[in-house]
Image (cartoon, rainbow over all chains, first blue to last red; front, top):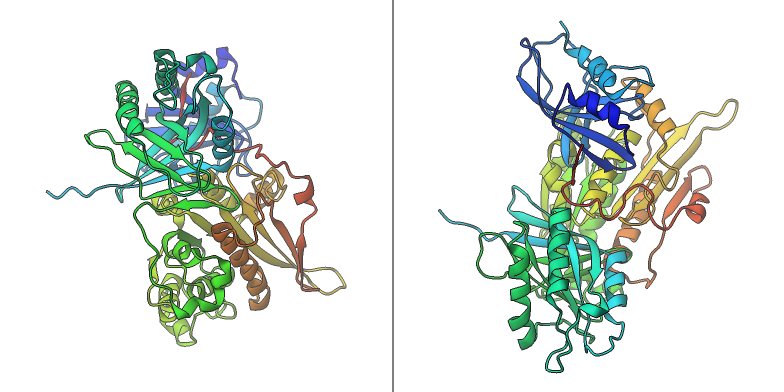
Amino acid sequence: MEYPQDQIDELKTIAPSLRIAEEGGNTYILIEQLQLPEHCTPKVVDLLLCPKSRDGYPSRLYFSIIPTGIPARNWNGQVRVLDRTWYAASWSCKTGLRLAELLMVHLKILRT
Amino acid sequence: MKVTKPKIKIRIPKAIYKAMLEDLRQPHPFAFERVGFVSTRSKTLQSNIILITVTSYQPVDDENYIEDRTVGARINSSAIRKAMQTVLDNESGCFHVHLHDHAGMPFPSTTDKTGIPGVINSISNVSSEPHGFLILSKDSLYAEIKIPGVTHYVRPNMISVIGYPMKFVFPGKRASKASRLFDRQSFLGSNSQFLFENAKVGIIGFGGGGSHIGLQFAHLGVKNIVVFDGDKVEDTNHNRLVGAWFSDIAKGTQKSRIAQRMIKKIFPGAEVESINDIWQNHPEKVQECDIIISGVDTFLGRRDLEAECRRFLIPMIDLGMDVFPVPEQAPHMSGQVILSMPGMSCMSCFGFLTEEKLRLEAAKYGDTGGRPQVIWSNGTLASSVVGIFVDIITGWTQQSDRLIYLEYDGNRQVLSPHIRAVYAPRVCLHYPLDQTGPPKYRRL
């Protein structure tokens, strides 16, 4: 699955380090060492963005570690993808968003 | 500080193994033998096991041989440069491959010992992955590996060809003395007990299906078993948990403990590792296994486990059952047994796993309740799983490349091939064989 270059460039303005890999027919975007807001622990995490439908959600954002310091969320998505363990909260986004929009909407779970 | 020697397991998909044999048997205008290279991905586990998965095969083109009647085959620098470029492009390891077309274990000839290491040393200069060479014969394999930081070549502990049936080579291991315990199953093949003693099997979920399977593995003499289950015996699962005693209910005995107790009582020689946890918290323990039995009870769980098994070239056999209410009729009991063999149809190819099922299951999260489960249907399904396992390991029925998706009608006690197996693709559409081992990311 290829993504439009303009969307990739837009996403890079938020997360410069982007890599991509496939598994099981899904394409995942790895965002390494993204800095989280001040109130979060840890300060940096890896993220795995799945822009397509997965686990019953239109898209999913997985965290390498469940962050603390944020409101209680339903972390219902402990999964193994691409030889790593990832965690996702129950958070629905509408479809049709650009990659950068998708990431920002998913990152709203960190808001206090 | 004592440095323990790593154990090395090489896993080769059957499709690639067949491609190698076919190519290496092709006559060459002047060379007596042909040569190729396989690309590999490797991962070193915390247990000091190095898993090497073969991801592709590249034959040496005809024009890259040098005419030399004193050796079986001599390849030119273009062939070696091409192999090095492949290693750089794919961030992979590389094994030189050729064929000694006889039966039995092949061994490197004097020419092999003098000629091949130089090729491998060149390739090692461009990558820190393990590299080495493979020699195939009609029915066996030989390998030596150069591990970064180790000056001498080492032999692997296991080479397996992943397909139906599997092919195993355990260099340096010999069969133990035949035991009367397994006398009546000797029709499975003269080396069947040796295979049961040396292959490692993981049972994910020691419930109604997994406990039956553990029991049968013990009676068969399967030695190396890893059991993953974080649950305990309760009054509501006692009706189907083979090996559980009534006293275990009050004690709250862990299912993984039940597994160990039961299997060891039947087969004291078994080495049972009990993991009182979900497998996702111990993925490397799954990756070490040669076959996985999936007694997972959710579609989402099956999807993740299958993805893990596909990545590390591990055949997975799944079983499950359910009872559905039918208005104004008797409930309907159904189930399935599915073989997910790397390279061949996966559970999505079979139509067993679908986005719709995953979506519906995710929507019901937390509302699973107690699903109906009984011992006899689990026993039927489990016995079929064990039969498939035995055939994959030993090849005793002489069947090959089977697509297995069995459906169970529990009302009529009938287990039969699902119609979807007829129309499933023979080559997996979801897990290509070049996506095995540690994932390879592309920079955006």
